[in-house]
Every structure is written in C-alpha cells, then in structure tokens.
Length: 506
Image (tube, rainbow, N blue to C red; front, side, top):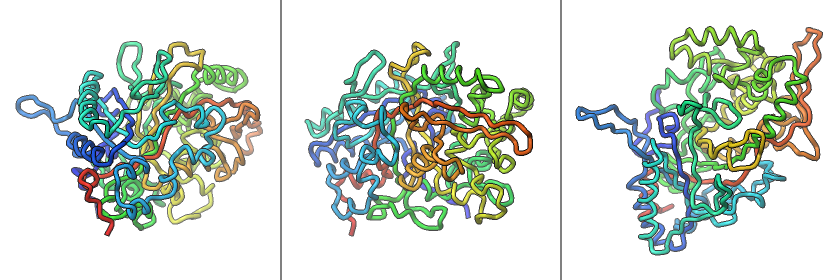
C-alpha cells in the first residue's frame, strides 16, 4: 500500500532539497536559550514562519506564485531541548549519539588532526541550542527573513541569544551566521557543482510518501531481486513510521507526537582543500593511464562535467560514447542514465573503484560480491545505511592553487538513526574498508588521510587481462571538518507542543 504522509506537519527541508527549487542562497543561524519561558515563546514565533513540506503550486490567475521567496526551518540539539525544559522522561528517550553531540563522537567520525574539534570555528566552543535555516531565491529574500528573525530574538529580551563565531571570506572569525550559496559559472548561471568541480546531489534517496515517485525512484530507491527499484521505507528517514526492518525506529522519544514526522539532522561544515586537491590530481594523472578527468571520475564514481556514472563510462573512449547518448536523450532518459545503475557487472571494482566516493556511500547491492541471493534483497545491508543529503557550498575559491580561505560544503544528513546511518557510513565505509575487502584503505575524497601516514587505494585491473592494478599513493587530506553538531528536527505539531510547554510523555 502506498504510504501517504501529512505534508502539512513535516518540515519542508526533510522532503525538499531547496537548492533544486531555485533557492540559491542560504543562511544558517545558531542560537542559545538562556530562559526557558522566553525560549518557548521564541519557538512559537518562529513556528509561524516554518516552511512545511506541502508541494508548491503554480502561479494563480493574478500571476502570484505560491512558492515563497524564502523558507525557514528549525531544529534543536539535545542541550537545546533541555534548555526549552521538555520533560525529563522525554529527554531520556533520545538516543545516546544525539545526547552526546558531534564533538564527543569525534573518534567514531574520524575527526582528528586538522578536523579535531579544537580546530573548529569558534562558534562550536559555545553551547549551541537551536539551528535555524533560511533558504532564499535571492540574497535580499534571505536578508529580509533574517531581519525578521533578529526582531524575534530582540523581543525575547535576552532569553534567546544569536551566537557568533563563524569564519568568513575576508578572514573574519566572529560572524553571526553561516552563509551558503550555489556556485555560478562564468556566465553567472547557477550550477550544481561544488568546489572540487563535481556535480553534487544526483542520487539522493527516494522514500515512500514523497511525490512523483515513479519518475525519481530509478537508482535512488532500493534495489530489488528482479532488478527493479522501489522506494525506501519511510521510517528510514522519518520517526513514527515503519522502516526497512518493518519496525518503528527505536530512536524516537516519547510521547509519540513529539517524535512523529520528525527526524535527526547531522550538520557539518566541511572545508575543501582545493589547492591540495588540484595538485594531487595533477601529480597522479601524470602516472595514470588515462586523462586527468578520467582519474577525477575514478576518485568520485562520476565524471565531473555532467555526472556520468563511471561504471557506465569507465574510460575516455566510452565516456565520449556515453555523452552522445546522453545528448540525444529526453529529460526522462537523462535522469535514467544518471541514476539507474548497479555494480553487479563490476564486482572487482575495475570500472568504479571500491574507493570511489559514490560506491562507498551507496554500494547499491554490490556488497554481495557476486554471491547469488546472499541476502533477501541485493541491498538489504545498504538500505539501512542511506541518508538524505541537504546543504549547499559555502565561500569562494579565489586562488585554486591554495587551501586557505573559507570555502567548502555545508553538509547536512537527515536520518532516523544517526548511529546506524550517518555514523556507520562515516566510520565503516568512508574511513575503513573491510566491507569492501580493502582493509584500511579510505575513501579518496572524504577519508581522514594522515599526513604522517599517507594512505593509498588500488584501482583493480580486470582479472585475466594481464594488466597491473594502479596504485594511488600518498593521499593527502582533501576535506577537513570545521564544525557541526547533531540536531532534532521536530514536526510542526511537535514545535507547537514545545512552544506551548505541553510535551507530556505520560
């Protein structure tokens, strides 16, 4: 039976990736609550502007669009929920990972060396209680909503404090917000790129209850034994719904209304070492049997120009042919070419290496390693590790030969179980490779490579081909964590309960 969700009750950023709806700018605010009563009143005011997941319509007869100029969403750390004085019995229902917060999970996440919390933006030395996001179709729309939120903060008369301490593009280290934006090409047109040049967000998961499933599920849902794709269970991403284990997520606090239609968010500010990446790519391409762009595709699992999956275009010649087919396809055909693929015919990783970013974060059933019917479904293990990606790039790369500056990705992962989903992928698949039969080899782009003990990965050769494998050695750390925490995104019903002080776990 098709799952039907109450979209009026779900915060919009859970269902919609705003950047794909022409919301090109974003601003993220972090606040501290110093007075529970005033904090709850503030939450009530913000709730009146919170964007729900209700689909946006087309223009009406007068030409007025129902698409907002700016969106607003809100979430809380565990400390924030305590500051808002939700009942102790409800607090005890939250999972340990969320209660501890991100910085105390640094060993699990591999946040060491330059990524250690000691090196994060100054704001993360503060007690962060509340996260508020503003996404806008223009920077003016973002500023207007920001000014309104500032008015609500001032109206709290010291009960709510906007925290400072974000790094900025001009060397600042005490900004009151984190801005983010899509990247633009030379003509000023928005692109889906990030600072390393890759196309981002192509394969975001699809789950029951979302709209337009048939057009989006290929390669983005769960792979079935007959080769078809079905939407993932809603409970993988929303509390109060059945998950892939046919259970309700055990990470839900009480009462049911506090948890239902809510989820957990992982917020991470990831600095991209653009100069190091470009030098490393240049150095390695000099000893690689293929073009520099082919090597870059081996790192990510997709080609940088248009996102072509390397498993279907494993070398320069096949990429040329893939591009011809892609250019001739209609929009539906293009989507299918970008997402509808598996690694069933590449169990040795000769086309898409096991170290590639795409294969590590979503193995698409390939963990069976060719063993027929090893699990009930090819992706039985993978389906429990999926995460919804949100966020945008931040900052500007002014000199592509340098790492300094303030530029990277605001990474947000939404999941019903932080430990089982995000933390597992980060620890076991990005920074460890036993599930891929590659020992300690880390994922190339996001792995916490150690300058004192440089890592390596192996690009396998086709068995029986007589060709040697290719070794990529001395991998530097390409991405560094600059801050973050774990947040609970309540439903709109739960927001009203929190604001009214009527959360009742009995």
